[in-house]
Amino acid sequence: GIQVEQSPPDLILQEGANSTLRCNFSDSVNNLQWFHQNPWGQLINLFYIPSGTKQNGRLSATTVATERYSLLYISSSQTTDSGVYFCAASPDGYNKLIFGAGTRLAVHP
Amino acid sequence: DGGITQSPKYLFRKEGQNVTLSCEQNLNHDAMYWYRQDPGQGLRLIYYSQIVNDFQKGDIAEGYSVSREKKESFPLTVTSAQKNPTAFYLCASSIFTGGVLSKKNIQYFGAGTRLSVL
Image (cartoon, rainbow over all chains, first blue to last red; front, side):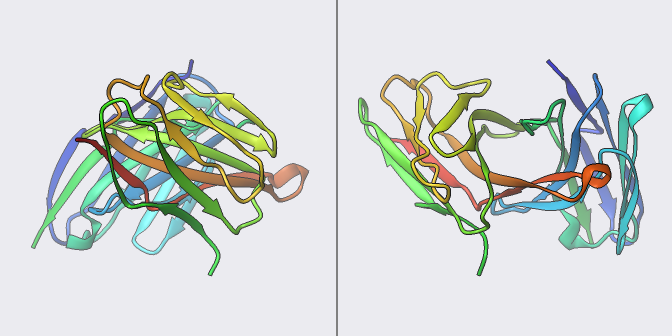
């Protein structure tokens, strides 16, 4: 089945810094989503982005489906950005998401 | 308020006991899913259902059972056959939206249930 790999596994930033998180997937995808898991465990939808580029405030994402990767950009990071960021992909129409292991982000003041 | 409600937030299971986790959604979504998350890891799919009265096994279905008698509800039972049930369980739902050229199938998650073994 499809494999989803995220890098880096851990990231420590000073407030105000920018960062790029990467997600590689091993096969073509029907769905690709980015999530932020807060300290209470809630998964918050960031982007639905099987291809193309989207922006939402300080966050933006780009998926290059032909090269099988997606990038999540965080600009001017804030302490509230801390948590775990997951990339998840589905290879078919059943939308069974396969999750990466996540990138653990800590933003210090 | 529309959303996905999971209950309880915390659950404890005794040896040999079956326990049931509740998942209810009022989003009118057709598809529902159950995932398991172990500490420091990503989520893994347990079961999913595309329509009422039908469900399919995911990657780690052994020791679990589900039912889908109503569109809004997709309860998960952790049976005594599941030898390592301690984990965070997340329920999700999704629906296809958009036209032929702009079809989306975005999955939304509940707040989760933390299950521990006594």
